[in-house]
Length: 119
Length: 368
Image (cartoon, rainbow over all chains, first blue to last red; front, side):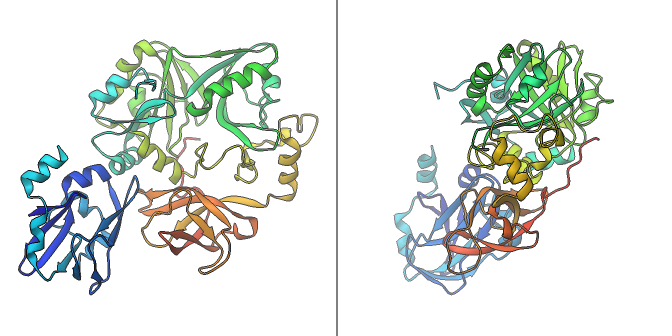
């Protein structure tokens, strides 16, 4: 598992990268009440705004961590956004991306570095 | 946060694991470990305990105090019988709202509760404008609210309050000294607001929290609870630029201040009474956005999906945990304020439909 400074996690599944947000992020956001996901098949560039999360406190954007294509989104979140709070690392995933070269993940933090990052 | 004040319950909040934030000059609990959503739902199902000690508690005393107070508010103050409370508004000369408040007839005095952010200004204003009336700020008492369907049962274990009805006020003896109790609140639930001596406040609140049905609730849930109940937040939904009629608060201005020998005589009476007769150009309405995305405060409103100038703005917006849907309040032109009208709010560059709806979003459950 890799982590971004924006508190996303990236997990490789076969040739896809699954993206979600960390428990730390959900704690900061509070209860999540709405998740807007991108269309499947969307081509995105790194740092594009791809997901909007609304918590009880505020709206936040999730940026695409990599260049690639969104091939699958977690539709369940539309009706049940609290899954992100309840199980951010598994059932609360946002989308799966196809990227050209998985080695681009190397630039991101591993778990130890992320833990140090959030202090 | 060195300039921020603390209430007498600060240590208790920290002990309970609250997340403290600056609010109206105080360090206040925005949420406890339960979290905003669960705190909201807990209050609707059980009983929620809120520290509202940051609000201003004021005693007005003197000959003819009720008549004198009527010069500052468009309410029938003299008609409030002893042991009863009423919602009030300080208006300004333009018909806007300086603050909203609660006032109660306590026999030999009026007891007034005003908003934290306005209290210094309100007290100075009352001292300046209530000739011959003593204006005493009560700074040695905490104020807490106990709200929800189980509030009465929980509170009755400590003080005899079961006979009180909505908007009754009483001084009730307890093991924590005399409690100044009103059966009211800011959640749409049955419940109480309780003034207790500072040196007894923590023990009193711990005694309430010892009941399994009572949980401490922060400002986050307080806001979603009051919004579901259709209640205005001063500084957001009402302020010096909104009149009571625009704000759909006509119900708060009793007939005795509109017709007869006590009609008018409060700041802004000309405009407010004219709007009462002829209607205001805009109105505060409830809005139910389609879908699940909240339309938050300052979302611009439009009459149509495409084009046109903004017609108004959302003044409060959040997700309503009990209605399981987003909800907003805002101002729209009078002709678009009819229930069922669809208007459009611009969220992240996209116009999303929202339906004008009656307030409250969720029926209130006061004990009448």
